[in-house]
Length: 263
Image (cartoon, rainbow, N blue to C red; front, side, top):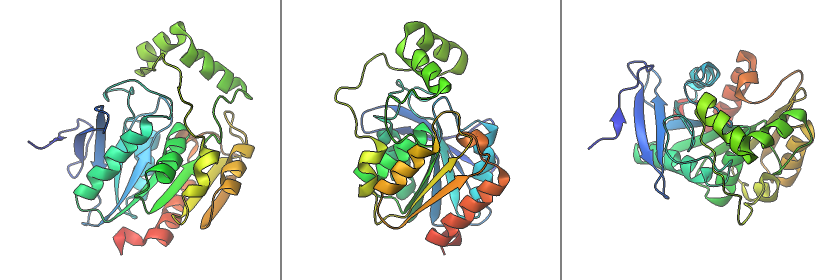
């Protein structure tokens, strides 16, 4: 039986999938297809509390369709996906389930583009599991437990306290695990060097209110070649801060590394 099902917000050429990770978690995903068949796909990995339904995510997906078809999905614990969020640890299995499904559908070239938590997951996935042809990290943390900004201190209250987790589930449709990491997963800066020779682009805004630019430079410095670093003036945090102009730059970078529509 096919796991492709109708999505209420989809275009006629979109397909919705229910995927299952290697550790048994169901993942809600949508494949947005371009006008012409191609063998290249781009995966968008949202930040914490994000969803493939977000207008910002859908706009980025639309902008990247000239590169190839685009798969968006919800991480575990988010909206209709199963399980509980582990804040970037087990989520590499979610991303691997998406990449594996795209490979099974016949896509020979797959790139991952992650935002915030999703960027940390994309970096760790490429370094630990591999199997992708390019990686873009937008607004990623370089290390765990960062509390150097007011927003990150508030976020830690939300994920570490019972009342905060209740709020996230009730009002943001995000279920967060109450278990602490044991053992601590490798940090993005610790594994970035293992991504090479896969091309890596690190993007960060100098107006990010969650993670300062030092996080981006730490990841870039730890990575091997080929690598690029973009510090974007005036840019805030993650997918909601991505302008049409930045989407076009991301499109051009991916096309340069992958070839337009798999060519």
